[in-house]
Image 1 (cartoon, rainbow, N blue to C red):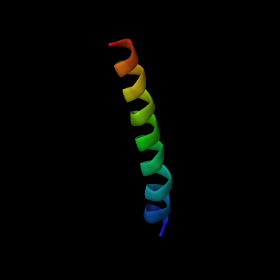
Image 2 (cartoon, rainbow, N blue to C red; image 1 turned 180 degrees about the vertical axis):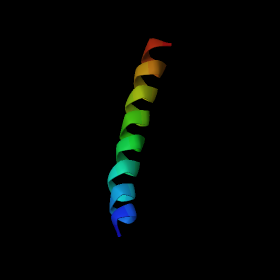
Image 3 (cartoon, helix red, strand yellow; image 1 turned 135 degrees about the horizontal axis):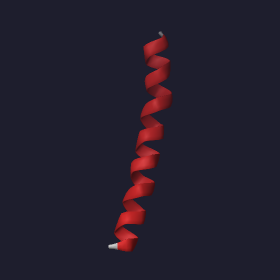
Image 4 (cartoon, rainbow, N blue to C red; image 1 turned 120 degrees about the vertical axis):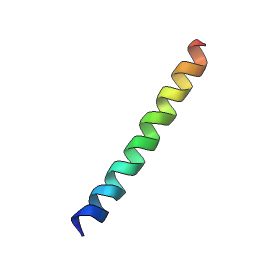
Length: 29
C-alpha cells in the first residue's frame, strides 16, 4: 500500500519536526 508506506514515513517525520520545534520554542520562550 503506497499510502500506508508514505504514512509510516511521513508521520514519524512530522512528530520529529514538531518535537524539535517544540523544544526550540520552549527553550527560547
